[in-house]
Image 1 (cartoon, rainbow, N blue to C red):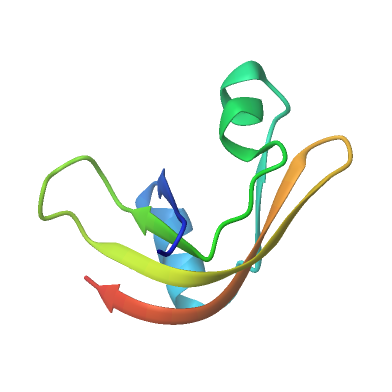
Image 2: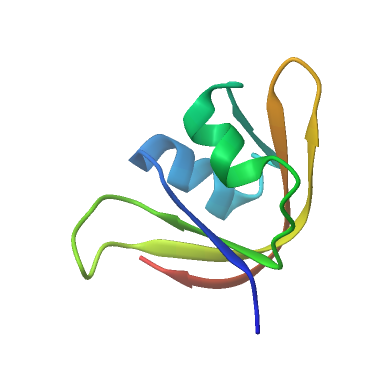
Amino acid sequence: MKRILQLKCCSKTFEEIASGKLKVEDKEIKPFWESRLENKEYDEIIFKNGYAKDAPFIRLKCDGISKKNKYHIKLGKILEIKK
């Protein structure tokens, strides 16, 4: 079974991911992100542009998560885009 990380993003971030400009998504080290990212592995990431049921989304391969002073989610190959 695939492990999928689902994230929301604004339209600017959505376009940067779709164009291939954004390769890493950073998240602050806070309890919410620790519970979702600490010691977890994901196969795919879905970025959804908004909260609507039919909102645009991008599905990508997850190339790993690292932690220094922030969580760095490495974005892999785009698998699907629905605009």
